[in-house]
Length: 114
Figure (cartoon, rainbow, N blue to C red):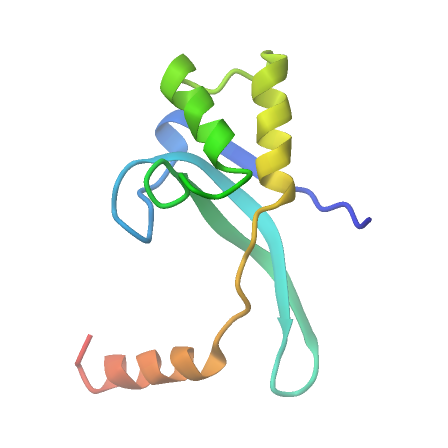
């Protein structure tokens, strides 16, 4: 199994959920990459927000969201929190970049449609 470093931030550092606009519970920077048009690997990081609404039904998110509802803020000294955080972080999924959708959005921006 490949290990990957995931940086997690909570409390005031968490942005809104990009899917629904509501307050996020956690923000994680996860390794992410793709192969560009030239066939070269492009590696970097992308952000993922844990959202109480959007992620509630996800297998590894639900228990962590419940923990937040019961306990409030993140507590890295609480073994249960750490266990749930690791389970969530291990299964964070970042979809591959849709290059055509990106190009379409850039073109819409250039035309002043966005």
